[in-house]
Image (cartoon, rainbow, N blue to C red):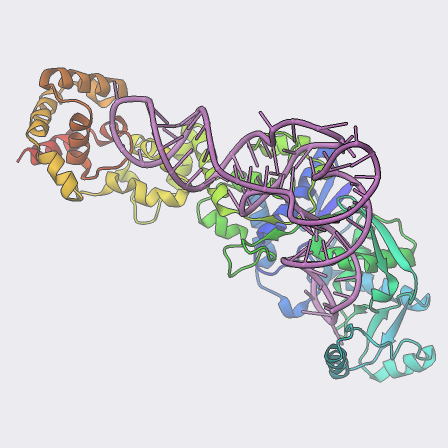
Length: 471
RNA sequence: GGUCCCUUCGUCUAGUGGUUAGGACUCAAGAUUUUCAUUCUUGCAACAGGGGUUCAACUCCCCUAGGGAUCACCA
């Protein structure tokens, strides 16, 4: 069993592409098959430097390693279509010889004009077949010194019916099919031809791709029939949508996988989130490792309707992942995702642990960590000022300073019992006991749990700030 | 516009003829007797509409409406 992910190198990996790649990957792992990566770079005008490297990097970041593809030749390479031109030419010639394709000399201008008049008349825009029945010999002669493209011949009547694993049987009337160009003037094949030839030659037997390919699937099937090749299984995935339900696109938010990486999302969380878009396990579980996903993945549970990419839920899920990290892994990750303006040396592990529960993404580190790196601890507003200046607060501060030499203050349980002791001594309790201490040492009304702050701050810092608050 | 696909809470979804239509995110309230957060509890919130079929339809069929994709010498 072999599946493939066949993106065109546009410069980055789209999250929709990530979802397609993921489903292919999961399906291959589930069935013990091969996950192949092929680069569909037949459009020279859209070449982007470094796009392939970037694509592979994003795939790897997400944990989707391919078994076969660029750099991993299993005997079916090369895996970039721009390096397979001779192969395509052979098959196109075969189609020509068999009468399943013909050379077309129509100019771009004529075709554009044709489309315009058709559109103006409310007609379907399609090739009018001018070169379709041209004498073969005449065509060969013209081809000697005229530019041409090759079009595949499509039946004029009848219908094509095929089975889609997620949608069931789909029927297209042949008259809807245009004589698709399969070889461009520049000598490159179009997607349709290259895709079919490669899938066959590379042994791909299951095609899992986005729904946008559904309308061109009949053309691909026709090609398989012309070549007398065995048809692969098709499964068209529902689209990922913008909040307005149009196809997920730039302008309405981030679509590149690297954008999500840069915004501080964990690869596992992104994968988990995207897996649940258009697929579900059939029970109420929502958090899955890659292994769990591949164990239970099945095309039968893929939905038909498009799914809105809801960033709110991704945020929530990412927070779940951050909180579920083993402490040492968490610490290591945080240090790698520290904002540039924060010096890692100024932060101890206790401070990093203190902010963990308030993180949704690594990007939240900056604002949450601020109180641990700043020297400013003046009360943030009038309410805060009032609380530190209360008579009872001063009493609490004094009592606290007296106990500063007890080491156990600085661990969580020790601090709690110290506070209880102070409560007993001073009679101050609740909000009036805790808040003044918080504000005196951080300046803020809100923040992580006080014991965690105390642990992270250490004696010296607390002493100076408490003494300052007494004045 | 033609063709094809789709339609359960705002969003992601469960559901396969008989259910108080379930879960999750978001939002609201409460609790965790220090805040925010976390966590927990509770709550708000949906079968697009109309016809059939059936003792019985969210579930099956038809129509309508709405949404989407696609109609390139781009993938």
